[in-house]
Amino acid sequence: MMKNRKVRTAITKESHLMFFNFYFPHYVTYPTANFQREIFSLTEGKENFYVVAFRGSGKSTIVTTSFPIWAILGKQSKKFVLIITQTKAQAKQHMMNMRRELENNDLLRKDLGPFQEEQDEWGSGSLVFTTLGARITVASSEQSIRGLRHNQYRPDLIIGDDLEDIASTKTREGRNKTHQWLTSEVIPAGDKNTQLVIIGNLLHEDSLLMRNKEDLEKGKIDGTFKQYPLIQNGQILWPGKYPTLEDVELEKRKAGNEYAWQREYLLHIVPAEDQAIHREWIQYYDELPAETRNDEGYTLL
Image (cartoon, rainbow, N blue to C red; front, side, top):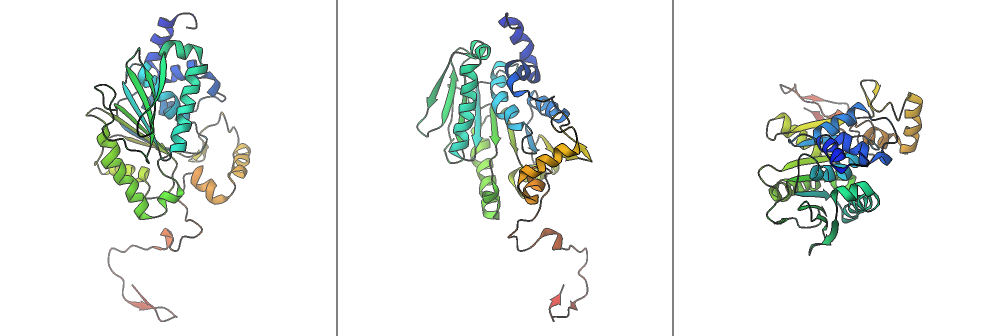
């Protein structure tokens, strides 16, 4: 494989996991977990998918750094990959990560190159692969993506990575704004057979990813939703990195506080410190109960 381009491209073209382990071995610092194999499997399919995973799970490395390159070089033969982040700084970082791989990874550069970097009038960055007639464009939600084309191609793979943060999900107005932007700007930017992929952390019970999950359950959209907390049903999902509960406890100390740990690693929706009304306080009734009064004279329904 090292000596023969036809051999290595033939093998890695069929499997994103093989592609990743061959071209990106420097990222493989721990044994691959089963949930990561599931994510690789999702990238090898054609349907939309949505992934919520704990911090440090490797989801961005797999989906946002490796997948766009494999989608072009692999069996999917994508022509226009669009990566969208929340901020320009995040978009710039993703572009730098891919460019660094293409510049410093000799085999990858030989097999995918030559490439050139371009900037469009909106400030979006692109990597253009002239030999394959393909492009990877990275943009943020702050930039316009209307009418984006690469030659005759509209984006045939759209990847959204961390499209929300704590601030944007704090109000319903902010959550509605993100959802509306996805449905009215991002999805229409694609074509009939465009694959949509969104990954992130669990930030709010009404966040974009949770709305996607609800829409999937109601049959409003097609695709697969996967949720990967660090500990699931008492089992550590990445035993190669966290062999014991003591290792998990050490990671917990790095989280800073219980709120961040529950949200970012265990994927539990917990009330913010300044939240006035907690969800567990709300009670639902099939029939209205009889009117009662408490000791302070308030009427309770």
